[in-house]
Structure formats: C-alpha cells, structure tokens
Image: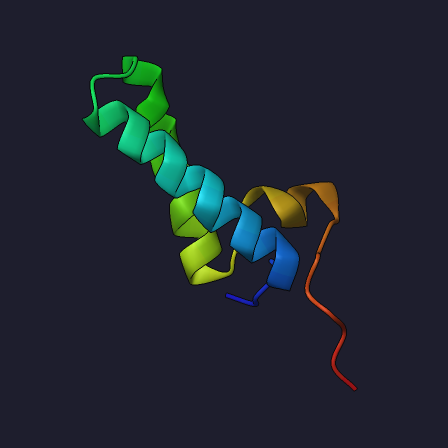
Length: 62
C-alpha cells in the first residue's frame, strides 16, 4: 500500500473527520458517522479511491 494522501490533504481529512464524528457524538444525524472515512484515510495516508481516479496528493520522491 503506497501513500497517496499528502500533507494539507491529510490535515483537512483529519479535521473534517474529527468534526463530523464529534457532531455525531453530540447527537447529530446518523450520516455524520461518515466522518470515520476521511479520518481513517487521513490517519493512514492512503485513499483507496485515488488510485482508481489516477490521483495522488503526496509529493513525488526522487
């Protein structure tokens, strides 16, 4: 599994994921639990959708 989620993308995913999960904990709608997905992909650094779309936000290593 090759990393494909870069710095700013990772930070945004973690922040949005935490916000959605916190909202779900505080009585928000059930769909707010979808925040687990960006939280996990941000924490792991791999998004399974990116290879299918041919994307990567990780900087290229020489």
